[in-house]
Amino acid sequence: MDEHGRPEPPPDGDEAATLLGFLDYQRATLAWKCSGLGADALRATVGVSPMTLGGLLKHLAYVEDDWFAYRLDGADRPEPWAGVDWAADPDWEWHSAAGDDPEQLRRLWRSSVAGARERTAAALRDGGLGRPAARPWADGRSPSLRWILCHMIEEYARHNGHADLLRESIDGTTGE
Image (cartoon, rainbow, N blue to C red; front, top):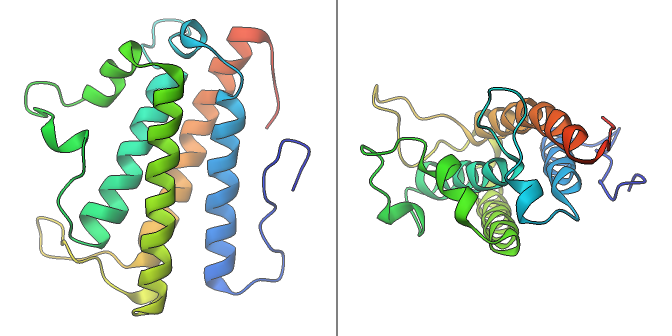
């Protein structure tokens, strides 16, 4: 663990351990950037962007559930996502986060991450990194678990850059 409680990816791990190590590091970075903040801080924006740390938590909870439950396992979307009218508001998770309690947002994100970890472990036992997602894309292709993990690392890394700027604007906290 580093000084912010983030697990260091193994420098000598196999492919699965390395991918999971980097994903968990990115997840822990988001948790660090959102830690200790109340509702007003989680709703704060920078410049003209409507992006918030609360919105990031809810968006990444959705992304975790979408890739690991819906795509990888082929399950129905869990709540709160199943009841959303995505046609009416395709960015619902971003917009609705402003009205959510900070602990509710953190619980939702942690629950989605826990479910993703369980599904990943099961998929590794049932086909390994090459296991295809149960729910294919519209063009019929099914990404592998390996692809999903790489995509999730990229998703978090990109949004953690946003989180850096947001957190610095809130209280001056900086760091990678």
